[in-house]
Image (cartoon, rainbow, N blue to C red; front, side, top):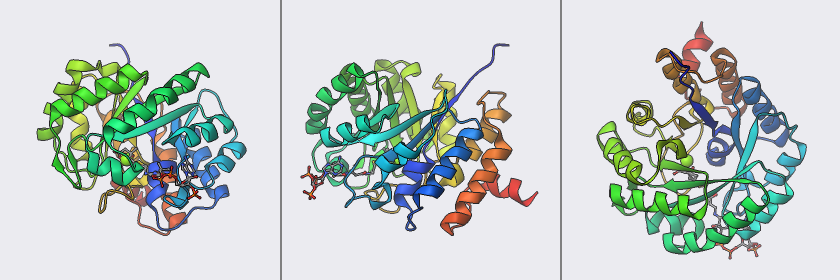
Length: 298
Ligand code: HMG
Ligand code: MG
């Protein structure tokens, strides 16, 4: 049987830390990233070139990239909201940028100060410039199940916007259940609609675990051939503009599940779990991964 590989995109240092009350000093963030890379993760989102007034946790992303030892084949990504962010990301020599918009105007306005249509207009020249410089562009689409301000999202809306991000030149679209309210019952029809417009190979899923459905929601994605999964060590994270949302589905849980299904991730679960335990202690919070806690208790 051919090896069934799944690519994990580690969100802990960005989505994870952006919502933690305690700001992790640069040296510890670098240590976290080094541990994550040593555990075998090859795509790690480590920063965001956003307003430091809005997200102080990511304020020193430039300094972080400067100090970050590069180790092929690991790729380091960062969020970019606008031209100012792109310029900072280019100076920082990021491997991949993430542009981010949503299916709903309410969330997009709260998050980046403009509506969805306006965001796509803004992104077009950013994608062109990034690609000209050989920087890969990921397109995040938030609120794919529901918006904290506007309620449920129609699957057709998600499909149309995912296609537009692809047409802009994004190499991959990450579908975000930002507030973690989806179940396989709502995720499956959303994915079916999107897969009409965008091939599975260009999609990633980004599930927050607010209602404990993150892992269950991976199954309809895997069944439909999606092989890129966003996750966060120790289940860190949330979004400052999505009140009450908790972290991404924990990386340890995702690796445990995938290995149980006979899939290949390239990740050493014991090393990853040790990293999750370590970062939880640094942050003075409980370890948000059940797999992490179980392995730590052994
Ligand atoms: P703004 O205040 O609406 O607009 O910010 P502005 O362009 O008038 O700028 C105001 C100030 O911000 C100015 O500084 C700019 O220089 C500065 P001042 O003159 O007041 O001193 N500024 C910047 N500084 C640093 N880097 C920049 C930048 N741009 C402007 N790139 C802006 C608009 C987009 C910047 C702001 O709204 C912002 O930073 N938003 C980011 C919000 C954010 O980071 N959210 C979390 C990430 S998204 C997420 O978590 C969801 C995801 O995980 C997927 C999912 O779960 O669904 C991806
Ligand atoms: Mg997120």
